[in-house]
Length: 441
Ligand code: PLP
Image (tube, rainbow, N blue to C red; front, side, top):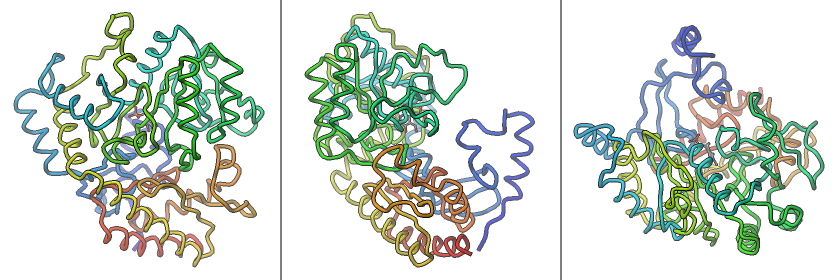
């Protein structure tokens, strides 16, 4: 089996005459050999317009925690659509979703909704600055917080502009951003509590918030070292900074209480996206009541025509009910399947002499393809990743996987969903074996 993509190729050629660049999100241009056009999905499977079937580990960049097209969600959205698609006003559904979040997440005393996590990040930074009267946000190298001006500082700096280990350069990957945006950030290394303490001390009294992905999923897949999140909590309490957990990826993947419950911390604000809506444009900012004071007083503006849209709320209510119903079983199911997939990929890769190294907690994981001569051992930082990961060879391997019916994310991330089964993992590994043989040939 090796897939071909004539219809996607034709559609992409046609798209470029109307859709700028033929795509609607920059990352999609990385899809080789051509950005694919999809026809339908069901559970763990996805079909493109050429009739190729994929076991999907991309799962809508992690949003499809409940799989493709779950019937209950379609019904919930359909029933709401008959009553109205948009009111730009209140409805009982928003209270029902907010009350669920309060019960699920320890620090979620209050809730506000938006349409994307990118927006919520901006709202959280604004709130933190107003709350503290300070300008700076401390973020970690390699962490991604949406595509807006403020979310991308320090995300993927090229090696020739890294700065020193102690003083990572503040860089933005996009043109069109005013230089003053960079002045609003302090960048620190991930997973180095002592370095973090030094960075905070260096700017003591000027930092409004520390923002982080609890598991760094946007560069390899790195869990926090023991005590790191507790150090962030301690420093925030000591210096009156807000602790902002960006759980866009980890939210609900780790179960009802999200990664913060798994790692035992309560942030001041949490950003939720992706799985909260199961694939509809929905996101939330949740946090302690005190964190929302400036919104309540009207001193901080938070708005949006489509905020708390009833179609999205209907979907979110259905999604959260799945997580509540499954309870603790859900993260265990995802971890079990993910770890089996990771182990299987590693064994197959070894058989084909491919230095592929899966890493992560299982419910999401990353495959690093080591450069020739690169050191063994887990990837520990953004720089370590760039130095050891062979991006061009991974792109070829990923394409071989795709052409054999296994779809992982372009940058090497794999997501399990609640629709994936043991059979999907077994079949995925059989297909991967053929892909590895082709890659190695
Ligand atoms: N934060 C994190 C950790 C993310 O991974 C993403 C998207 O991948 C975002 C924020 C932005 O989410 P969205 O693209 O839904 O605005």
